[in-house]
Length: 209
Image 1: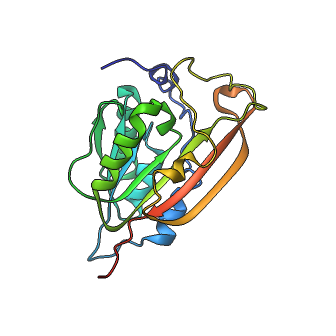
Image 2: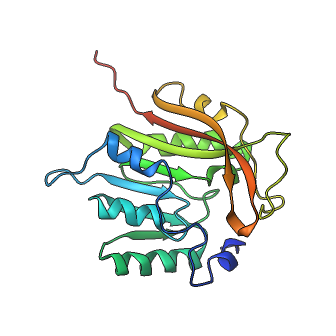
């Protein structure tokens, strides 16, 4: 397993991205509510130190967190223990990894731009095939904008930023529940900068015949 710069970023006691869930996490709860008889299964692709998977586990989801950083996964498990919830973790590189089984939610924020362009269609089709009927994908990806300077903590040569609307093109056969493109302020690495991002919720829609 190749090393990642995030091992060093996650090595400290503080949480690099903080412990508050990302902005799309509450939208999952608005669209899909766990109950005593229904515990949705969710995988977070690029879970980092676990801020979102712990949030989902607290709200009744059965969660799996996947990440390339073993250091981040260790912190995610420690965070889950502190929070009194159970999580499953998978140490894997998304460029080689294929989902198996069925998930009600495939969740990912700020990770899929690490997929090389030539691998994206294949990976997304795998994610879609492993999504339950009426399940959904909740995904945020960084988008290339020539007027925005590169982030100071960007990993040279590792990111393959999406183009505007590209994410939607992989979901032409699903229902688009939500989509937005926005530029936001970021302070990762302690240096203020900006990113452009596409945020999407898409549902696997089954036609009645």
